[in-house]
Image 1 (cartoon, one colour):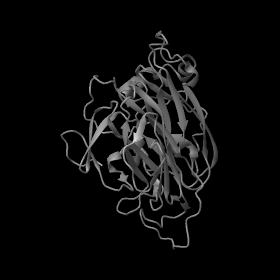
Image 2: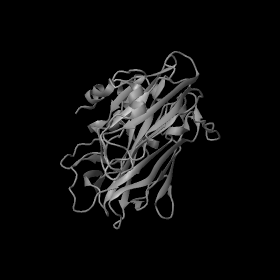
Image 3: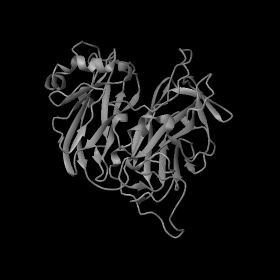
Image 4: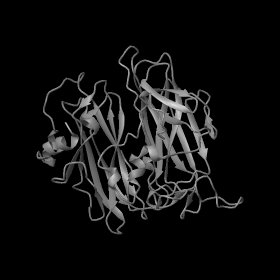
Length: 390
């Protein structure tokens, strides 16, 4: 069923009844029912920014797929005269509740999917803008409902860069052929994989230089060494420093110049041969600005500052969305192989691309994003497709 229609079909239940009693009444045993959780980040908007896309992480902590998944946003305590939500693609708000579906209505076992919702400023007011509660629901009972709802405060305050990172779950095997990476079937023990994540600046000042830290789940190592990155002895974590990779605010990103507001990054990984099938958790990506500049005087890869000067230390507007977790999902050998699917940005949710002026397209148009600071340019192709897609 199309998720928009599904959300509309249940919207009539009313916000109070849904949030208090749950959406579905079908009984289910704990060992056969999905255990879902939800986390929210990124609800502080820079004073000079027109809005931002906040992120909710939808987690399936069980070994069974969750079906009929819905996300509810309770905005009854949000001051919509200061900040509002565009619920395009979801059910119209009713009693302060917005109901949305996810792609395919299913959250697979062990997955961590990022779900974005756009916040837009109304007028020039700053300070506290109330709060939003997000809840995740699915068909059947959840064995642990204590983590099915999260409440976050919404604010308009601070000035500076506001970096956000979105990391894909790793689910497919890849092979490297010349200057191309081919995406194969499901990931199995002993395979090579690819971690893909995107970083972008939703603040009101340029992030002058970028520091990226990546931690891998147990049983996974980096498959190659990259220039500008330092690795621990076990090749299970890295820190990459890109001093000339500047990210301007997404609200200032215009076509036709050399300035960029976001980048798409990737690393090749090796999955251990003795790793058991399942979802390997504990992986995370963190992004930080090395410095901050109020104006866009530095183009990507170029510095307008003299040799004896540097950008001032960055003050992050909202550090809650500087880190994103991901899982490496390993399929048992002998199982059905996957079908040549290119990894894309995992972000779903209300139509983020409709947020004019705050760079929603940077999030959803993954193929158009820049690949920064790689020692060689590699493109992604699916089997039988030799056309560049990144």
